[in-house]
Each structure stands twice: as structure tokens, then as C-alpha cells.
Image (cartoon, rainbow, N blue to C red):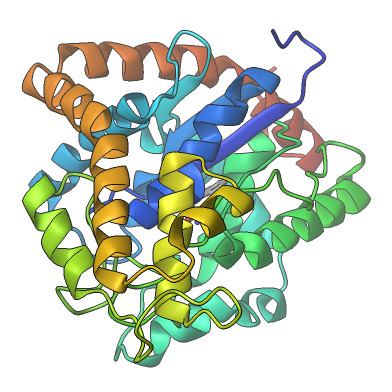
Length: 333
Ligand code: TRP
């Protein structure tokens, strides 16, 4: 059991789009596995979500559903703090302060910003300062450990830089989080294009499997997944699509490499796909049942979120008081 000396862990996901098996096998599953080694805080980052327009009613629904998914996936609300970012306004307050100490050049270098803005005509300023808000999320709670996917490592590096710059301007205030991440789990690629990481925003109906897809839909999608022109699994020369299916199988079944080789060497792709489908369905079924229960009657989730805010808010306010003091913002006296 962690005690006061265990590091704080902070992570978050945006309540947009459908969560897919890549989010689960890549991140959520790891969050649940490591939660007892830390003092964990899992946030639903709705302020980040509105950096691109969200339909307001749908957003509110999605926020609770995201929290329900955290819990259905195994985040233990007795142990872990689960809350919604916008219920603690100190996040945006600190983000403003950070945006004042962050050179424009640092933000311009962010590859996610560059790729996200490439196809758009007009981009909100929020998308540009997004990493300052992410830094605020993490540093408000003095988190030492931040499990994120590799698409977020540049943002995490920036968080370290912002913490360092603030500390040198105003005096030691923030814990600088570690860059070496607890392994975040499997990297799942798109089913239609195994050279691209599975992503919420990728087009194409054969790209990803939603966490809430039915067994028959999972079967259909795995059936259509790209393989290669070889007749059977050849571990000496695995095509990317086949390797991806095997990764999914291992992440769901827990089978190690040796076991997996034994089971699938020389096996036809149809047989492999059947095994992957079964492993996925078996892994997702309990999660889906719990999710359905939690979203049918939302009182439980709402109570957990309320409680999460009550736990996190005093920590955030304590950090902000130190920040206001150090920066020289006015405090009534
Ligand atoms: N930017 C992250 C993503 O899109 C989400 C996020 C926001 C986050 N704040 C965070 C992740 C703080 C870890 C810590 O995936």
C-alpha cells in the first residue's frame, strides 16, 4: 500500500471520440496495473477537449462516460482520485501563469500542434497553449510520475522545462516529473494501416475497434484487418499487420513470446484472427458489462467524481497559494 512517501502519479484522457482498444491496451490497462504503487490521480481533461469545438450536451455526457470507463477498466475509486479537470479552476489559473513563463518558441516546436493545425484553416489559441495547461495539470499535484503514450512525451519534456524555468525565476516550487515512464503497455496500430498508431481521429471504419463494440462487430473488424500475402504466420518475417494482431492477442491473453510462438507458428491467418477475436471479446466483456451498469444509473459515477474533486481541490489550492505568493500576485491582507 502506498504511503505519504509514494510518488504522486497523474494522468488524463480527453473525453472526446470513442475510446478504442489502443487506448485501453496501451494506457488504461497499465494505469490500473500500477495504481497501487503510487498516490494516483486520474483526470478527465475537458478543458483540453474544448481546444477543438465540442457539441456541449454531448461533451457533458462523454465526461461521465470517460469516468465510467476508467472505473470499468479497473481504476479503483477507493484508492485512486478520479476527477474532472474543469471542476478545479486552479488548472486554468496555473496554466495562465505558465503561459507567461513559456517562450513562444517552445510551443511552436510541438509536433502535435504542427500536425493538428496543418489541415485547419483557423486554429484556436488554446490549441497552441495546450501544453501549458497539461503542465499545470501535472505540476499542481507535484506529480513525479506521468504515464502517457509516446505521442505525449514531447509535452512531458516541455512540462519539465516549464517547471525548471518557473523554479529558476521564482525559486524552488515544483517537483520536476520523471521522463522515464512506467511502460505504458502495448502499442496498437490501425487495423487498416498497421504503420499508423490506432487513433481516435483516424478516418475509415476499419481502422479501430471501440471498447464498446459487440462481439460480432469485433469479429468482423478483426476479419478485415490487413495481413500480408504470405499463407501463414512466419515469426522470422512478420508483416506489420500480422505483428499487430499478435500484439493484441498477447496484450489480451497475457501470453508471453514463447507461448505465442508455439501457438501460432505456421498457423493460417484465419485461425490467428479467430484466436485474436476470442481473446479480445473475453477481455472486453467484463469491462463492457461494468460500463453498462455504471452508465445506466449514473449516480455512482457522479458521486465518485464529486468525491474526487473534494480530494484534489485542496492540493491544487495549496500549490496555487504558493504560486501567487512567489509570483507577487496580490493577496488580501
Ligand atoms: N494531452 C494528453 C492527451 O491528449 C491528455 C492530458 C492532459 C494529460 N493533461 C494531462 C496526460 C496530464 C497526462 C498528464 O493524451
